Amino acid sequence: MQEDFSSLPGYTRRGGELFCEDIALKDLAQRFGTPLYVYSHAALQSALQGWMAGVAGTRHRIFYAMKANSNLALLKLFHSAGTGFDIVSRGELARALAAGAAGSDIVYSGVGKSVEDIRAALNAGISTFNVESIPELDRINAVAQSMGKVAPVSVRINPDVDAKTHPYISTGLKNNKFGVAFDQTAALYRHAAQLANVRICGMDMHIGSQITEIEPFVHAVDKMLDLVDELAQCGITLDHLDVGGGLGVRYINETPPTAADLVHAVSQKAADRGYGDLPIYFEPGRSLVARAGVLLTTVEYLKPTAAKNFMIVDAAMNDMVRPTLYQAHMAIENCSQADNCEALWDVVGPVCETGDFLARGIALAAQPGDVLAMTGAGAYGMSMSSNYNSRGRAAEVLVKGSKAWLIRRRETIEDIMALESTVPVEAL
Ligand SMILES: *Cc1c(COP(=O)(O)O)cnc(C)c1O
Image (tube, rainbow, N blue to C red; front, side, top):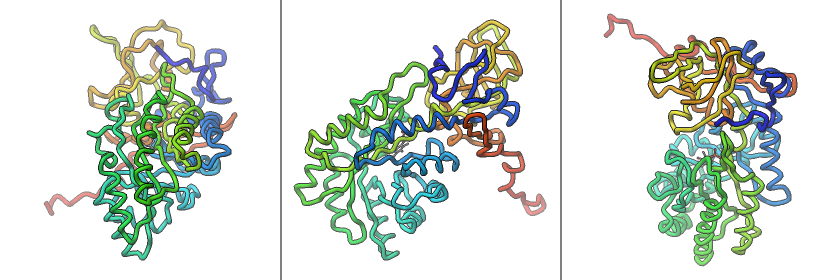
């Protein structure tokens, strides 16, 4: 089953041709080459507005989790729309700052922050570290002390809630590496309260990704608030609650709640528990960018075999790893009307791996030379791409109306080799 293109904001089919806003995708492929990531400005705005409208008139805040797509052009757009950023490395910190964010617009997540990461974040004056263990807390305290600073910290708890998503993107179960076990959280906060160079400011969670129901979020918030109650009894108060990201999107036929529904349900739960005044932070990644993007790829060969039909295209798992890494299903369509009949195809790339596929067993009509569009490719596509098989990363284009800007040029073979040096054979 394929997602219907007409339901994607920013994309339409006109007279058989697929358009991103007012430009035919086929023309973008011609102009910029393939594989190509294309993002619709209107679609990004629509996703942004969904979230911003949800928090309008409240003290809640949106921190875009940039690991979903960290292109600077998109980050600038989000910054100007008023989002902060959720980062997971000092590389992402540098991107947030380059996009114009202030330190106070940044929250820092992740289980393995290095001394250098912590130092860079303290220098930037970030809003809070989301801390995931006692040794990390102690390290943050020590680094802050060495710099004569006080580090704002929140504790990422592991609420042990089933987000009902793929195991690789489920993060809030007690056998996941993330967060502090529920029953150890109060002790960690008490420990933090003793440290001179940290200041407790919040509590955080992130239970997974591509979550298509509200219930796991509300259940997890309920559990968080039990801890907040417990902390209040020891005189520890928080200035915000961070419920993480994870809101799912429609790839094929999923029916996730809207951002506004999620914000409303979570706020309602907090209000019911007597925390109606506590600002809530949200860290959406995927739901802000996934549906704004398509990955364009050109058909190289048709290779029907006795067992299966293979459609060999010029994009591969190094460009888009979600299908093989997470068994993700993503829709693929021909950008133009094909002359031949539909058949079932495995859409595969040139990489030397059996796991190199974009889709398996999907109905498609296409000929060599045709341009295909994979939808929902705006999140965890380009940001997870690699140079495997010495393939240069794809180019990225932002479209608004009838204008298209190249926002990342295609990587060349020279780019790929530029960081390497050889050793004279005589020296070996
Ligand atoms: C990945 C991640 C997010 C964003 O998740 P999405 O599913 O893309 O919304 C938010 N917070 C943290 C800590 C993350 O690791």
